[in-house]
Length: 225
Image (cartoon, rainbow, N blue to C red; front, side, top):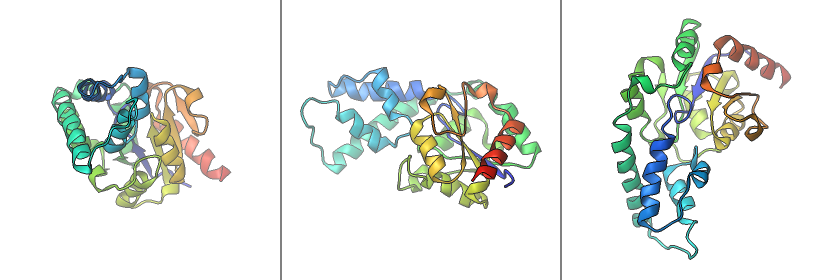
């Protein structure tokens, strides 16, 4: 099946906002006297804001009980901290290899989309001045189920007007790769190959991404189904 679209996660794939997320969650953790570390922060990759908050609260030795309103208030405070941090993101913060890849995909007539759990995806893409490179950005506020549920990737395919089987998804989180696979798309992972045993292909960095290779990987994957 012909490759018609490449659907990208945002954090860690287009730009690295992981440090911004970490610092914002660390501030909340410090406020609640929770032992939040960089190592534990890895568990929050690709996870929705409320689910990330629940994981953070699980660090408490005693059960912390909050009302839904209190949970949403905490999550919103984290988001405000994060938005202050990402205000400094600029075009030079696009990860290596991404712009040439997007330009090549466009030249080949292959559609592109952002499928992120971040409700700030529009702001980040705006700060990066990359709006013209993506046909659609999925509005995370309208997505009910977090990755590894495939909803956000399926929504991207639907909005692009393509079948999921004709798409490649690019992720840097295990939950994201699982979501791509659940959507019946070709799964490309960025990171340590040992962390992504089920991905169809893993690159160690975004700099290695290549449009022609993505087409060939997709063709091999589609032929093996």
